Length: 184
Image (cartoon, rainbow, N blue to C red; front, side, top):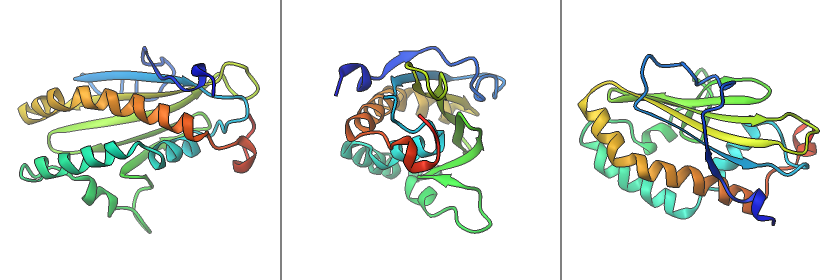
């Protein structure tokens, strides 16, 4: 696979993303982008599911460690979030609640007592163009000292997780467009 299709790079928050301006103030805002091959799906929900399903194994270990450390503070754990969903509940992709979806973007996230966050999975440049990109953007709004402290600790890991997830999903191979009813 060409390096151009497997390396995520840090970019500015896309101005067209639904997460821009969602909170009155931000304690973290970042975005990472990767080029999509022409034959890859352009459906942001399909791409988000692929990202979650193909994360590197070390991310699961890091998440389990995080759960142990934050459980004593009464924060939501990944184990708890994984049990949510189902009939009558908001849709979820992995542990993330789906807050909105369009033909080119899905917005995921969670609200908790220490902070709220939104994660955008945005496919830009549309079907049929040679330079389609998938951009994962994160915005975080902290409510208190616990949230700001938590964010200071996890922010460096967060950036590694997003970049590694994009790279791994690309190496595994993006789901093809024709398999999901969309067009490349």
